[in-house]
Length: 360
Image (tube, rainbow, N blue to C red):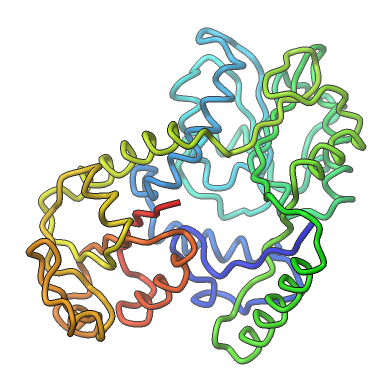
């Protein structure tokens, strides 16, 4: 298990609304403040990043496989967050009875107001649930990262008291491929020290976001909690444990569709292109270009490369002076994403309208 640090979420920088902690995990006050900012920027699920929705649709598909179209099952979502999956689940399975829990009182309004009033439980699980509550399906999407091993095991153990006979728990977790070696641990130690120094020098302040675990660690903790069957699809009263690593070709197809939807949303608008390289080439193969005002590259590249595919290359400060308000399509590999995002916010501000094209 390794510590994880983060400095933005949904393209909202944490430093814009909170003092960040390197040692203390984000608490209830942090999430309340975050969702206040979130609601200022996102008033509809359609406004969320297409890449984010792609990941959530993968989770939704797995949940739907366990619920018949005309099912009237009673379902519980643990820590529903912004409510995107719940919004879509009720669209696809309108006959179910859905309940949600969430730590923050500032939950976004993607769900019906009456639903929020009657079916939402604010607080920690299981304290916020009623003893008589019983569910056919309980699902948890990416919650384990914010919990220690002890907290996670205790939560999983408690959920068994709220399952109907033959009910199932669906857990969707990200995971990390990592292995033991002296060199790897030294590299991780050095990286942590660098992150710590940059945080306290205010060069790159970060928030302790949680923990990353391997598949083996996930399975061991589930077994410790008494979940006896761990499989991709099991309906015998145990566990559905799903990881977000789709097959490469399937993910590429999904990404192309994702970027096509993104392009349609801003079709006909003037946009900035930021970055070129492999991600830009991938984008060109996926969707038709929009109305680029220019290709934004660093000053040294802008001097050496006057144009890309007939699109004028300009440095970021020039683009920001011309227009800070038009959408920015960001082309990047995953490992360069954060650095490029910092550059965008430096010139365009933290409210920049960013549409990421990320080459994984």
